[in-house]
Image (tube, rainbow, N blue to C red):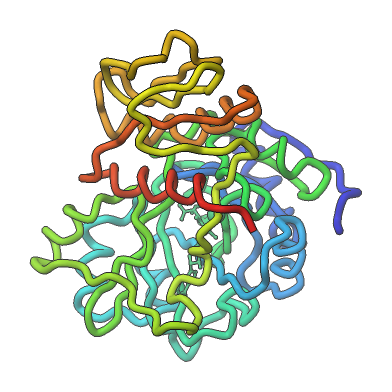
Length: 327
Ligand code: TXA
Ligand code: MG
């Protein structure tokens, strides 16, 4: 394992972007903010850099990576966009949407990053620091969330530092992210498929397509369509109990809205994702609060019900993974 690097942390600035650029050009690993979560970037055309990235995250190598580019033009050099993909790109890029499309003949993304698939996952992030890094490099950057594989995704530079200090070259600190859950992933196949709920609500995508998104259908025993969707993911160390209608004394409480359930007075700690029941605010707080409550109760974390519409679909997806049995 790579544990002997010195990890520099630089506040976001033109200078930091230049340092990130030379680091990526040299095959290094740079964590940077996107509007969803912090990403761990490597030059997508450099197989050796990608191998180091998998190692730094301790990520199973069969799990492919998202290629980040600055705009649709750059995206079309690596992926083939049919009418639906084009419509979604034009509506939601730059932003928290990833599109899985067939690779072009001239796709420069290394095979290791696409796990040998004929498709490539592409995202155009909106965050100004991510944009500056992508424009400076002028090549696609693969960037999974900048956490150790299986841990909760990072929404601040301090989270990245806690997980990856000594394993990567540089962290560019652009402050806390705004969206707080990862991008929505849509597979642009014959019928567009929702591969992962995320920062763009399903309803917004369906409104643009004028049709419902299909659910992924992997035949029993086959590799899942989005191989990263392992059931236990985003796992805190503490046990997580969903849809809690009461709190056991000593449990930590991850609340949503008001009023709090009976027993809350005896909770070891209470954090409210959004006192007013706002799903956008709740998404932005989700991963940070899971980290903050982790290990703070001998019993575990009780989570109040969160509505399933809009960003609630992504929030419930991540909570279900946090509560899933650990391997
Ligand atoms: O918001 C995000 O998407 C963040 C930021 C950093 O951009 N990135 C992120 O990456 O969440 P990661 O590696 O944690 O998740 C990427 C997901 C995985 O579930 C992976 O299996 C899926 O994308 N994926 C990548 N390429 C794919 C492909 N060709 N077909 C299907 N799924 C793919
Ligand atoms: Mg991840």
